[in-house]
Length: 197
Image: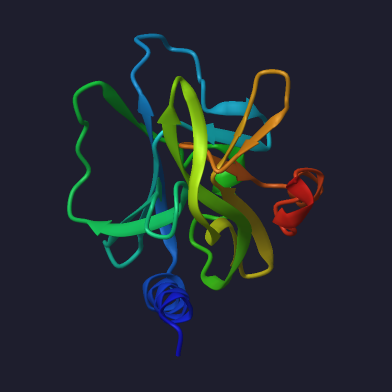
């Protein structure tokens, strides 16, 4: 089996063994501390936009941190188990379990996760006389852009997407956006990333 396919299969297997069958007890967002009380993460009532990380606390006590990373390419969705909630310097940890969108999901079992992959090409560049010149061959890139998480029939979408203030999307971002509405997921082509081109 090709090493890229093996890596994707391992990623899927890690998702299944970590998330499927778990119940969320609490949700936290890790944000840059702008020293203001404004809820920068609340893009709209049904879209949350997070600078850094989403942390899920499962009913079994495990803490799983979702973040943008470069396991496949910058920036896809990554995750790790963490062992304590801590506020890092320059950041703030916000408990959002009481937000109406999460309240409907807390205590429900994660029954499925679909990963939507985006594809592109990349090529190295070299600076020559103040110009960037392509060198080498183009390489094919695939990364996990969006997760669709099913909680006993209710879905949410988490994507490495940033919505600008004017609502324009910026894909492959160092950002996580959560959509609680399928209409929004469709509007921003989260289930069909190839339409973003």
